[in-house]
Amino acid sequence: TNGVHAPTWVAPLIRALYEKHVGQNWDEIALNPEGWKKGVEKISDEELWHAHLLLKQRLVAFVRHRSFHARLNNNESMDYTESARTMFDPNALTIGFARRVAAYKRWSLLLTDPHRLLRLINNEERPVQFVFAGKAHPQDQGAKFILQQLARWKYDPLVRHRAVFLQDYDQEIARQLVQSVDVWMNVPRRPLEASGTSGEKVAMNGGLNLSVLDGWWIEGYDGTNGFAIGDEAEGNEAAEVDESDAQSLYRKLEEEVVPIYYERDADGIPRRWVAMMKRSLETLVPAFNSDRMVEEYARRIYL
Ligand SMILES: *Cc1c(COP(=O)(O)O)cnc(C)c1O
Image (tube, rainbow, N blue to C red):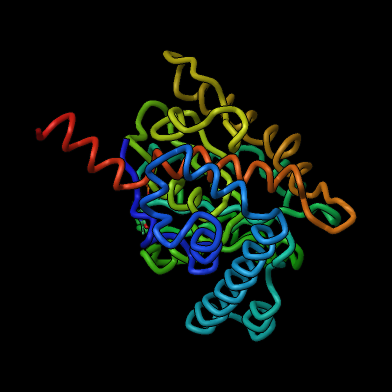
């Protein structure tokens, strides 16, 4: 399975924690699971959570800025354009979903039941906000669905503050998203995902993965370091699999992701969530980085 280059994708704020607790050569230590785990264990919940919150604040500023200018360019109404300045909430559970144009990524799976999705987004006490990013290619049916649905929600003041589509997904948008979201969602149709490197970029920044057990996630998920959608059964009709994966996705969000994220102690720290962030860092960074990948290609194939 492929891996990603940690020094490229890790946010400076998170890198500073690795340098302090793991060591200046943290990216080398990351290749040794035991040494890496020892270092990550020294990062306090408070430090990790507060660094993550700062990154989310930066993401909210980025979303507002991009949306404001996109609306201005599209000659949207003054009211709608201005509202971009206050959209999104750095404290709300933030889920990222970005992809290339490829049907197997099943972009519209999340829209299988729009009312159920709306209930998640609209929850007053425990809201969920979504950042979508893509190319909005004319042939991209999935992105078109999302854009149509967002257009319908455009005049619903609550929803329009909590769901956004960023056009022209590129490395800059990817960097902003993978360094800052709470959760990265990936819902490919099995077994078509070769790897899914964007989720690996999220993992090394402390974000949690919510993904179908395919590609890297079937190797990385261990029951404690993120969330799995669906099961591993194969051979059913595509439509049946889509329907059952959609139900599984909503259930995971409603019963696990949202409750664990919003469970806080007296200091306002989501201890169970932060414990999962640390499990994710400990278990995934040593395996899904490009140093391990290159070493393995060299040893097992080229040499
Ligand atoms: C990482 C990345 C990808 C690849 O993501 P996958 O999850 O492997 O499909 C695509 N586009 C951009 C801009 C990226 O940064």
